Length: 307
Length: 263
Image (cartoon, rainbow over all chains, first blue to last red; front, side, top):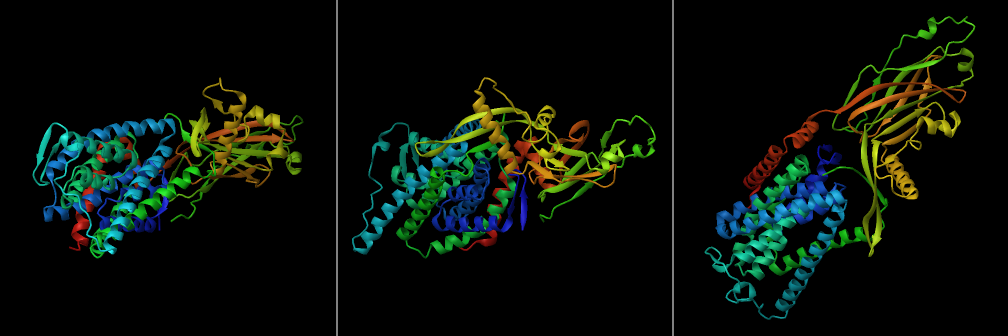
């Protein structure tokens, strides 16, 4: 069944979008990520203009994050104070990102920049995760107990000034890296249409040493607000949010997420991370190929005076 | 859902020619008329392109010339003029990057032509140039006239090529048919991505390869329906639209959790 997307101004198949939403929702429930990093490239592969894919992706991320946060609130695995500080940084980063977005769009370099960011970030994160999870899998096979870093260990981040206490996370840390991390994620959110969970989660665990059980809930909590802000700003400055598209993706996504979470409980952590790493790398490689392959049309048209 | 909508836009002209005295020694000059029964067309969301039929008539045709088929008519439906940027991708360190660009002023967004015969059989290339008739003869005015002519030429060609590849510039040879000595019917193509706005329908009359007369009419193409309302709200009330998009997402997330919860 075809449906016309009012903002993207193309006709698409409803079931393809619902299935896309459900598949990504399933994966995001399984791995505990928002899924924006998969949705946006998938939309681009499906010929949705990148500017609209990004803004709509941000909108879609809100739904899956709300769904996830509700279950974490019930379990009490959410640090509102830490989330609040991350959010403050997120708003700053997102605002900057929107300006860069509009600027690149005017230059005609937006599509390239989005693809490059995806390739670099997904390639790096996917690669690191794959190495880490394969090592963990090897370690468990050879019978050695996995070496976990103790939460008491300190690095340079813990020597920064302006310390603040986050009780739910059992953390006493400077606000500078927290704000910085929030701002970085906010920037990516507005340019890439992602919630940023796939960067936020490892950063909170490895850099700030936040206990793993609080990380996902807190990250999702701040992603709701950063993505909401990003959506609002994209809607007002670029008019690139397509609610029809977003709604189809969300509808599939929220259903898929709950089943994915269930399926995820049956897999072991390292296996799960290795699978996610492979998936992330596959998306990165697919996007990279598009950058290097000679495009079918060297020339493109766009309306002049577009902001 | 994507069935082509066909709108027949009819015009009925008082066929003055019939009343004209045929016995007059000096033949009256020929004229051409087109008119549209409606001055606006609404296309719906599922629009996947259509044919637009325009009727028109010749005034005072010479019966002999008409019998020999030496009258030719070209009908053009021209979309609203808009500035457009043409960009060219080039390889930088192996990656394809938009590098050079050229901006053109007042490029018709769409340009559909219907003719009685192939363009090269109707008249000389020069008269097309003078009339600025036909997609390949449209004058594209570069915003920066200081660029080298070779560059401008290259980007103009690319602009035309892209426009016809996306169906916005089209040519329908044989799309104009004479129904009688006076009456003709022209079928122009509306691309699925036909732009909204004021379109101009123009008819050109040629007699034995000579341009005789031109006539034009205006047509408003509008999008209608639910999707168009969304588009309007997104542009006119963008803040409220954003708030709505966020609320919808939050509600969907919450409902999704209620309906599908598995823990």
